[in-house]
Amino acid sequence: MNRLILVSLFCISIFANGQDNSWSLQRCLSVAMENNIELKIKQLEIKKTRKSNTNLLLDVLPTVSLTSNHSYNFGSTIDPETNNRVSSDLQFDSFNLNASMNILNFSNLATSQKEKINIELAKADKEVVEYDYKMLLLEKYFDALFAQELLKIQKKQLENSAFNLHRIEKETQIGSKPKSDLYDMQLGFSQDEKRLKEAEQSFEIQKLQLFQLMYFEPENLAEIVLQEYLSTQNQTVKNNFYNPKIAYAKIAYESSRKDIAILRSANLPSVSGFYSLNSFYTAPINQPGIEVTPFHTQIGNNKNHAIGLQLNVPVFNGFRNKKQIIASKIESQQTKLISEQEQLKIEQQIKLETTKKEQFEQLSQNLQSTLRYAQLSFTTTQAKFSNGTIDAVIYTSVKNQLLTSEYDLLKNVLQLQYMALKIRLLQSEGF
Picture 1 (cartoon, rainbow, N blue to C red):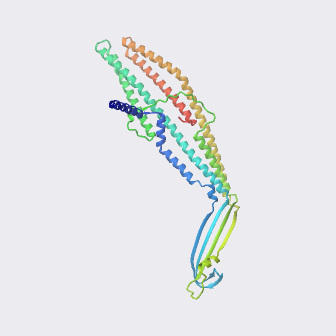
Picture 2 (cartoon, helix red, strand yellow; picture 1 turned 120 degrees about the vertical axis):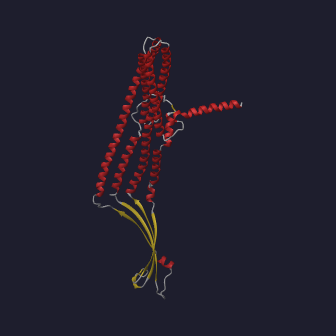
Picture 3 (spheres, rainbow, N blue to C red; picture 1 turned 45 degrees about the horizontal axis):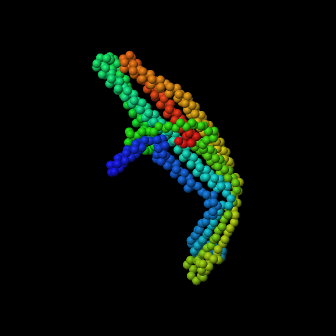
């Protein structure tokens, strides 16, 4: 029973390690999105924008301030209690409570609306960065995947070359094959070794670049295997789709329009209310025998209240604001054109990628047929070469044709998958 448990645990461990070394596109995306530093910075930018947004209700709340003043007046002065000029030294204390509030302020209203748009603009900016990052990650993943699949083909070619070279060496030793065939096979084997080494190096570099882009450093980079994306789902192009770059451009245009509204609000009247409570205390200095009214009595007697409304109507600002409004309108028009340009660029890119995908689909059947014929040709050529009816040069030429056919089909299959995912991402459907 204990042995059975140990064997089970060992098998589970092997399976888990295999799973850990196998990376799918979705797994790469998940790790990359979690580790991306720029996205974390953009998320903090959104939080900062939210915190800096002032609610319109807060602009309506009154501002209250309490001030006090303590001073000494020497020589001829006005006694605040009697309002008569006296020749004496006085101590003077004043207390003021002031409150004011905006009742109607178009500038605050426009600014509040602009701040809300700023939050949406920060979100859209993050989505654009995320979109560009996904595009780059998709490209790097398929570059690495192509290098991996090409490496498999090169390994098979080298195995075949090694088998035939070993056989030709034996036949040369017994005199059934000329040494020229051996030299040709040695040359072909050496070229296959070179191509395999180049494929290994290319795959290593592509994997390294992929994981560097993910901000992730695996412990077993050499053992990592990428999973092929096998979806055969047909990609439909939508007339109405959401793309982060288009959305960002549209929000930027709305933001520019709010800038105009803020500038225009400077020409509109504003209404505010105010309230003040004032009181003071005074007492002579170095004048014995003069009766001084107590502090609390003076404070109570000298209280003064004021409440009212204030209307502010801009009349003339030297045409400075008018020029700023005209400049802001021009900037808004530029932003609108940028939005339309972004829409057109994305639509053109989708059309271009869709056309490429259709072309790869058209080539697919032909490449499959070419590979099938190349495999049949190589099989018969292998038999002829074994029987000595053809030389090594012809054999190598046919073998290279098979390698090219396998390469072309592999490239076409992966390009089809890449284009389908790219179109989905352009339409922001994800993958």
